[in-house]
Structures are given as C-alpha cells and as structure tokens.
Amino acid sequence: MTVAHNGTAALRLNIARHIAAGKIRNSRWVLLRTARDAEPSRRSRIRVTADELAASLQAIADTDSLDALLGVEGNSARTYFASFADLLRPTTGITAFTHRNCWPPTDPANALLSFTYGLLRGLVHGAAEQIGLDPYIGFLHGLRPAKPALALDLMEEFRPILADGFALTLLNRRQLKSADFETLPGGAVRLTEDGRRIVLDAWQKMKLQPWEHRIAGRDVQAGLLPVVQARLLARHLRKDLPAYLPWTAA
Image (cartoon, rainbow, N blue to C red; front, side, top):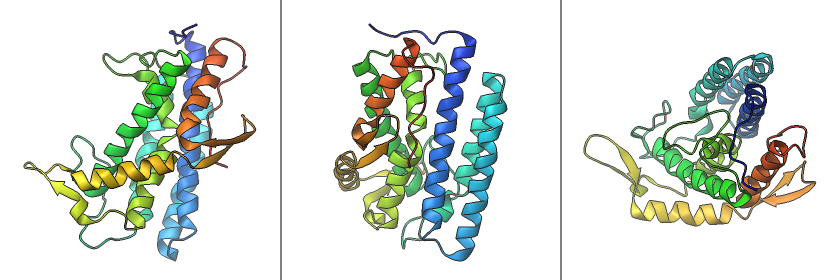
C-alpha cells in the first residue's frame, strides 16, 4: 500500500517536530564530537553553539504551529552554520568558509556541501519510493510544486552526519585540495571532475559504515539508514507505531 497523504494538522505537526528535533540533535553531535579535537578557543565557541541548539530543542517541544516550528528550525540552522567555520581546519589554498550559501556556492566548503546534499537527497528519495511513500508529500516542508517535500523532510535528520560530517572529514583530512575545485565566470565554485571522483569514491565507502540504530536494535549501514527511517514513518502513518522517531547518533 502506498502512503500518499500527510494526515491531520496535528499529525503533521507532531511528525515535523520529531524531524526537526532529530536534525538538531545530530547537529549537536557533530559539534560536540568535533569540539573534542579543537584548540581551546574554537572548542569554547563550538560548545556555546551546542548549548544554543539544546535550547532550540526545548523551543521545538513548545511550538504549537508549523510556522513557529519552521522559525525555530531556521534559527537553529543559522546558529549551527555560524559555528561551522570553527569545525574546519584551515587549509592552504582553500578559501575559508564564512557562511552557508548555495545559490550558487561561492567557496569550496559550500560547493562540497551542496554536492553532498544532492547525493543525500537521491539516497533518501529512493528510500521513500522503495517503502511506498510519496516523496512529494511532506510534513515539515509540506506541499511544494515540483519539490520532493518528503525526501527533503527525511534528509533533515541525516544532513548533519551523513552530509556535513562527511564533508568535514574530506576537508579536515586534506582528501580534497584547492585543485579539486574550480571557479566559474560569475563567481560560482564547483568540484572539478577529479574532485567529484574523490567525493563519490568516499561516499560509496561512507555508505558502508555501520551506525547504531537504537530503535531497530542493531547496527545499520549508513546507506540503509534512510530505508529504515522511511519504513518507520510508513508504519507510523499506518498506525502500527505510536510516533515517528528520528534516527540520532549515539
């Protein structure tokens, strides 16, 4: 049976809250994990941001409308990316990250993030279709013409770890160099063909990495996490589960 509706307003808000909370919890996980290896001044700033995201989690629990929830989620994303530069180790020849921009990306880190989000979106979209969910009918993002709203929803809890954390690893381990990016006329930055090859090879390896999944009670490969979560959402919509709970890193 294909699940193709987003239910009542109360159901939609409840699912959207869990999606947003999952994203923020995983964002804090990335921040706190990176802070452990950061030098003292950066560590202090990162932990302040993590505390601000903890406050956002409480604010999400108190929201009574989708608009209010979107406001909290948007503010938390801005707070998180304001600290993103502290997560990156300076790399010779690569322009420093200052803020998130994607239309178009104008520095290597943003170009890598945008490319990785595209990979993640494809992974999640396929998982939704595999389980029988309509990728275009969402909860947090709602109905958006020509936009796979549900795929965008399910991406949220995975963005910090499977996309942001993946990008941070490639840059901080110097797996990507300045020569792996190119600047187009107009200032847009993108990966070169060699750069894309490096990222795609690392992406395939990353998808095999096992992660603890507390609800499933077992480890799940990163590439299969969206399938497990799509299945849990479908079971909730069919009233087999009392709530949709996002995946969060242990």
